[in-house]
Amino acid sequence: MRQHKLALCKTHFLDWVPEQVERAISKYNMFTHQDQLLVAVSGGKDSLSLWDILQRLGYSADGLYIGLGIDAGVNYSINSLEYARNFAQERNLMLHIVDIQAEYGETIPELAMRTNRGHYKPCSVCGLAKRHVMNRIARQNNYTVLLTGHNLDDEAAILFSNTLNWLGNYLIHQSPVLEADKPGLVRKAKPLCRMYEREMAAYALLRGIHYIQEECPFAEDSTSIYYKGLLNKMESDKPGVKLNFYLSFLRAKRDGLFSPSIDENAELLHTCPECGQPTSAPGLCVFCRMFIQIENHVET
Ligand code: Q46
Ligand code: ZN
Image (cartoon, rainbow, N blue to C red; front, side):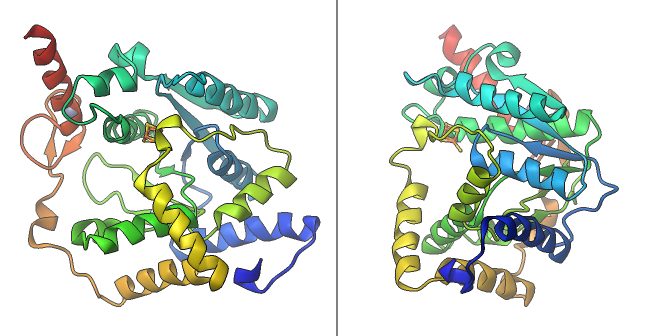
């Protein structure tokens, strides 16, 4: 690991990873052993490794798998569910499964086809639906923290994109932990935010974790993958540049570089009359509005 000027054998590497994750959990005050944790698992290496690490660190955490109904000729959702389900069964862990088609009538690509949000690419609808379902399941089952498997490469790519476009509001909200500071929102945390993607791949391999190796077919050609490629080029010339980019951002934020926008406190103070989830403006939330739009589309 040139980025850390460190070389470890298998045994020490498998101890080192959970130590690093525990350090991040406590440094950013993500959660404690008293919290009820829910991990969003996709069947990929990061989320399954995170679940594994939490068990090894003695946290009790349940999983949530959201079936998106993505086939794209490779049975993506069916296969990823298998990996998530097998992982949970082998370790006797509780896994909630929410199937979007069963609950909302259509798969994510079908929903996306009929909205203005994602005619050609379902990612916007998908992100919206995942955020909505994750918060709903966490609230309904009294989980206190919702965890995702975002690693350093994910976070650095998001930061790169937000910085290139100077998206101030996004920069303010990008954080290893998002407090549940608005009624109806569950606290969110990203315990792998300091772990390189390569480190997580090595961890999954060495721990014998079976995970879906293919990315979601819609991730291909995404801007985020392009930015990850650019950052990797810089990383190979200057090991550690990714970690430094992200940690310097967090330090700058902590030191007050970004101040919240004026209407920040007014955000998410309303409750959606349809689903009961928090929303930024009076009336339906974005998720429910999307369904109204789809229904109107069908009628016309
Ligand atoms: S948003 Fe887009 Fe991902 Fe949803 S459709 Fe696939 S690539 S899974 S993180
Ligand atoms: Zn709603």
